Image (cartoon, rainbow, N blue to C red):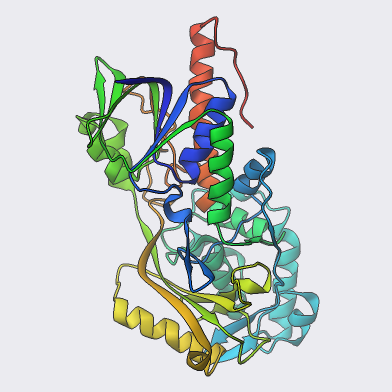
Length: 433
């Protein structure tokens, strides 16, 4: 039996963030990760000198970036150009991403150009929380008049959130994400694995114990309070508080009698978002100007992340092509669609191929703010004292990595606030921002 103040189950972005903030607050903390390496879906695989993320990754100007900077991470990389093309009816057209491209794009009429310019100006000051309770489609159809302007907004918002469900997606959070994207994004040198490496180093420096290769099989509780974490290899970790960063279905499975807790409602309302992703490394680009592509009438997206980040030891260009998936998922058809996108954007790419990675169904997030959601998940599981959840699915409006870091800090904040309320003399209240 190992005793800690806080046990964190899961060693991804949420788990490591929670552990670091807990340790900084003076808590004896352990992270338990079933894989042999930390990172979850933020790991980076190196193949033939090329750094491949698990799908397209960009760091927005949101909570994750603010958190990483607050923790002092180096975040080496650069902001890519926003010059882009859009795929419309099988052809590439200039996307209206700047004043020049807005004036020259053939996609929009002059009336449409004026409407889009007006909205891009207003968007930065928009109070997006006013639209948390309506769908993205309802917002677009009610506020945008020009048909092609609507199509452009659907493409921009789909890319910002990785979600291709405008009838289901709540408008507020994705509009806020678009606000963040207008400030630019960051592509990271050597991929997101570099962030995980820095988070791991910081966790160790703060005194966090990292237990990898140990699969948790149960979060045991008694008389309304957590007791310990039981691992498949027989390890028992006793903790006063447990932060569970597993997906909602797994969290439900790990907690005995979860049907009688909020975990059940959170699992039932969760809608997983997935994407098919083809990453390729090319010796050179057949069409050097065509590096950033939105699908307008297709749910695809292409970005050469090497235009802003170091992702290859020998200078290869690393391109990520994604297809945002709905209910229907066909690995062969999705791969064909991704390759056809590359054929259009970088004809002859196969002759320049150095390495590739195909992920037919990568999880983008296990839940998000959608119109069927009735319960806000976490941070505390109210029926079990000392049990908390974090992860990108435990969002209170944030998206993707921002939801992971924000939910992690909420869980730690809730623990510290509870201890302050209980008046424990050895625990001073510390605000997590």
